[in-house]
Amino acid sequence: METSLTWLGRMVATPDGADWARLNDTYAPLLRDWAGRAGVPACDRDDLVQEVLVVVVRRVPEFEHRGPGAFRAWLRGILANHLKRYFRTRTVAPAVDLDEVADPTTACARAWDREHDEYHAARALRAVERDFAPNTWAAFRRQLFDGVPPARVAEELGISLNAVLLAKSRVLRRLREELAGLVGE
Image 1 (cartoon, helix red, strand yellow):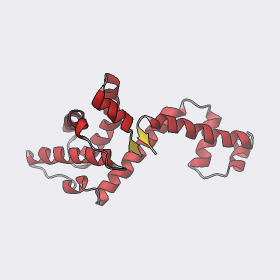
Image 2 (cartoon, helix red, strand yellow):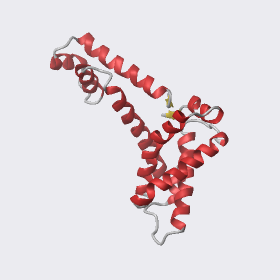
Image 3 (cartoon, helix red, strand yellow):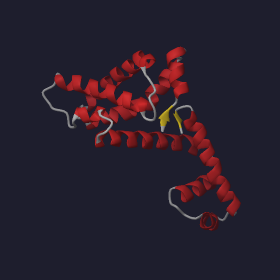
């Protein structure tokens, strides 16, 4: 999943309060979680995350899209730099190798990327679930997440095979719409 270049372009050209709120709502929980795993105490995480987001806002005009994962790698690098600065002034050592956080070739960075995608997918699923009737949502989940064949889902839910296939199609279309402003591909 990729961060939308349209959204980033708006943040550079004509950002509004909604863009900044979206940045905070979208990335603060993920950054807070990573700061926690790095060993930052809960009482300091919000401040550290705010510092990272301020840098993102200030430096987004400098961001260069160099292919898939460029924004999250850039964001990860900013976080790693802030974590290093944070731990330089503390007597406690970080819980992770901070050089690995920034290096896209490491297992740590690959875990960040996987968690980034899973986080955005789960967020989108929660956002769109309320748009569908319970049977439609159940038909979608049984097919996509449980791997149940459509004919069996239709039988289980007491709906037509066509309704099951349409449910999956409609939910996937709505998910793509939800993610379109944030992620591409």
